[in-house]
Length: 152
Image 1 (cartoon, rainbow, N blue to C red):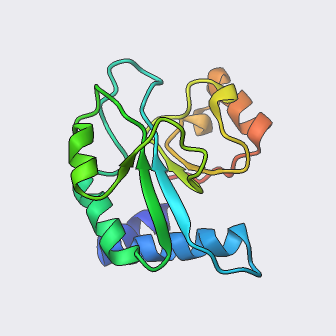
Image 2: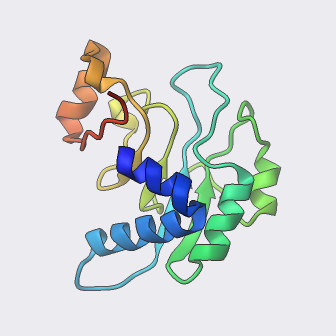
């Protein structure tokens, strides 16, 4: 993950997005090339969480730079997000409560309850599982998530 973050900083969002989408599409079906969709989760782990994994401008850049491999960017509506839903719509995203059509789901914090996870999806979010916090261990064990450390 640290390497991924370095590439993000040095190459810019558009190039990194193309690499991520190409990798995920190939992983989803190595024999069939298909477009994928990205979903931005509403943050609900903490009631005061206003952050988002992608800003509306990032969504616009993603759509412009990855249009040939990207079907859609779905955004779960959220009244408390730092950017209003209307800004995401203006940049080309589709507001949608149900993100089950998205192949990659992006969030800032981990999903609040394990039963809220949609099966057979790729999730990207930050979680303090490396610290061994008991409340986070079930998420790793039940879903066999891949752990990538960004710290020391």
